[in-house]
Length: 117
Image (cartoon, rainbow, N blue to C red):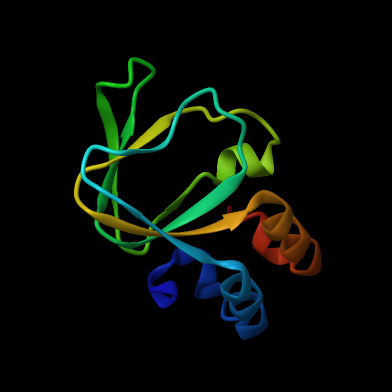
């Protein structure tokens, strides 16, 4: 799964290993909200399987779709802000999540990767 993530195309295996160490799997059913707009940003998520939709501020209108290999939740982490959009599972999804503090610590050690978020 991680080999499909654009963030890891920089080719530094140490960065990928640092991330993998802290990933935890979470399963969502179709129609479950994974993130809600306005919540504090506590995790960055990678889609291992399934499909999600990014919703407009009305939480009804899809503005984007993401599938296996995509990631989301990075904006709130990088800019230390509340969630700017809601994310809802369209199918059963397996998400690998990493906590905010863990990803920020890793990015301090790999500053070249920060700009790709």
